[in-house]
Image (tube, rainbow, N blue to C red; front, side, top):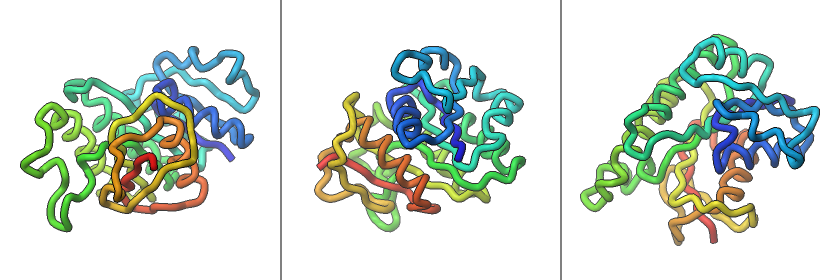
Length: 212
């Protein structure tokens, strides 16, 4: 099996790469500074490091070719000004559809989950103003996935902590999990996303997640 990880050098992306390699899965790791992944821990014949630009259609098309499962864990400016998350996922969707690849697991944010059946968290009165710009980017990325023909899963974590996996986390479909600790280890998030992708879980669903 081959997977492609966009945002492979980020806090969550690099852990998806490592966990997949540990499972002896071939990984195409895509990023602007992907050379940083080629260290003693990740040197592996199953790792294909591809340096590329997320807005370049040819770079993205090359990265998804031959993969059965795509992960988008794109980062970007907190103020949402660079549009990496929304325009990046738009390009990924286009190249996946052109290559007839169906399955993608993508990373969003807590605000895209439901507060009630009729209202998203980002639209609630108490949602923090400083989180709205990046939240709008996540929401735009979600809407693009929602309108696509792909089999998508959209993980919507709270605060991501730069810690390894513990296996102690809970998930909930479309709503935040209860009780909600409002944090998730990057390792646990990577584990949950990889597991969902490999098992075909959470198809066309948003996923709330937090550590126990």
